[in-house]
Image (cartoon, rainbow, N blue to C red; front, side, top):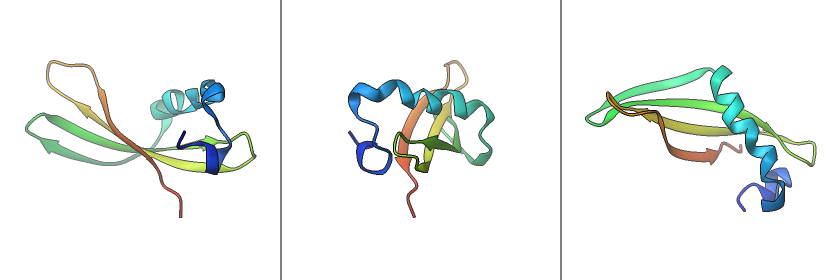
Amino acid sequence: MVFSAPLAIEQADRRNLQQLAEGVVAAPLHGTRATPFGVLYAVVVLVDGLNGETVPVARIWIVGADAPPRLVSTWMDIP
């Protein structure tokens, strides 16, 4: 799992990633871009790992005219 090295979160610990779903509501907007398929929204959510580390995780969402928001991409923004 991609979160294991920086955050010590394994598949069995996936409930800890609920932070991503909850954090997107309050995360500051880092940018938007209109596309033919809808508007892309970029946010960064800080995720606390089981090892005491906190890592920013970038998430891109698309919102279309007649569809609910959909997650397009997620990656860790590790310096």
